[in-house]
Image (cartoon, rainbow, N blue to C red; front, side, top):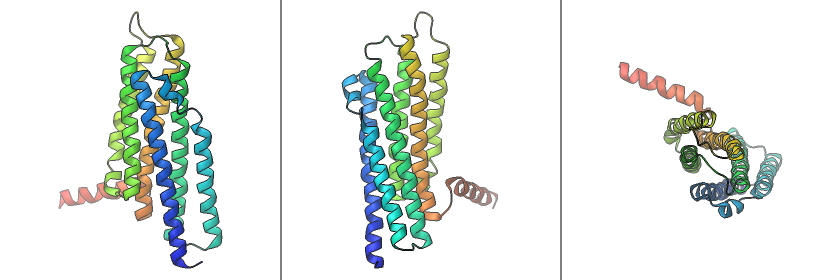
Length: 232
């Protein structure tokens, strides 16, 4: 296979992943809108996306395997193929978590809710969505400097996670919402935290793609460099 054709197919793979990411972004937008407005109708639009996203992921993974079999890729190409598979896996999982949350919204339609807990959940959903979107943008633009900032933004999700879990464990007197809703809320908190983590990992894939380093190793080198500069 001529190198030019191979490169075109690699570029096509990246395009497919970004299209996939755009679809998951749309699902997350619907999820957040459903949570903000207690809109079970918006949530219903996302029921069934899990199967579609898993099929999309399988197709991309199959194409990666075919490209590896048809031409012995150089190290840079292998890194790209590995990154494509890794990012695709994060997209599939994020889509699955989004559907789980939308199922919870539909299943608890009309249930009494704890206003403080619902406020924390909505804020967590918005923040997780933003981290995911930025991670995808970092990957698309291979912006490794911004990748290093994603973890700090994910920290806000972790704080909201703690706040929400505290409200679940210690409901306000006379409040708390329906038991079924509270049970689903506990699951949603976990799902949202994982969506944010997937966004961080997608952004971190840009570091591996560009430098060949894991984000953790690159971060340590970055911090060490800054310490050396401050000391000098």
